[in-house]
Length: 311
Ligand code: CUA
Image (cartoon, rainbow, N blue to C red; front, side, top):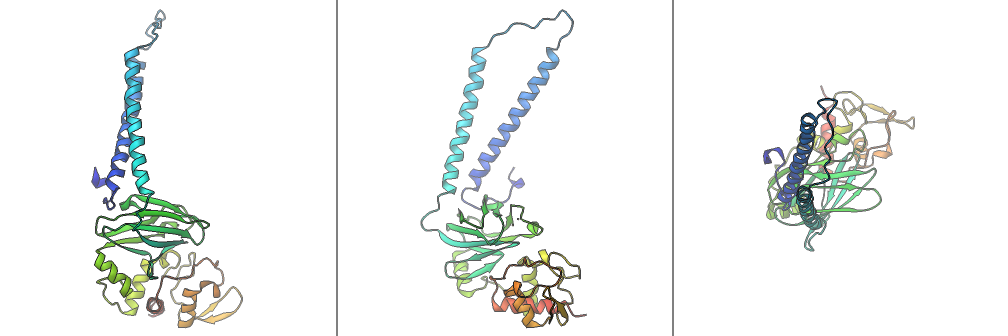
């Protein structure tokens, strides 16, 4: 049945799946058994003539004992097993790596213990406990990694926590599991589980281990699709939550203030770092500052936006 579920990438994923399947199978069994017997009896013992009388049956002690004791044992087992796993999931080990998670409409930023920040991609070392300290910059989001079997709401006024110990190398989906507005379905991220050596390189190098140095245009194109820009900005000329980026560079842009500005490199840079500074006419100031991006990343995105005004 495991082909139906995501990879079991955390220490407790197999336990979570076991109790989940157990409860599902028991629920299906009980539903089918109870309705099945009910339908069977309704047909078998239906009133066949006007003279039929309902027999007087008081009880059956052994039958009642069996259907009380067996379900009680099963339910206590479910509760016990669920409690043990839940306790483990809520008790991070003292040696956990602490990573700050910041959710916003619509994306994720991560900050590592040494101050490194990344956008949309969470890199963690294999086999080491990681504790996530999560907060939202705006509305309620929910951090969900199916492969780890973890999910927790991310709120604006308090920190919420998750922890996990990844046991499988590879890339896994991060979803937002709380409907948070138009860009909700695009609020995606990638969990990258790497070796401890690659993790150290990642922290120091400020770029993923083994990553090829991309030219600015390619880097910008990749960031554009990886970090969630595309959720709000089209590249084909249609307006969405944000203005389209096609044909912006090198042209005049009208702002809500009534001013007109030239869309040059400095304008694009400012609009990425401090989006509220110049709001384009006809749009809401909803874009969050792109804190997770380095100057190199910003230059890449600017190069990409420029390319959308060519040809
Ligand atoms: Cu954030 Cu849905």
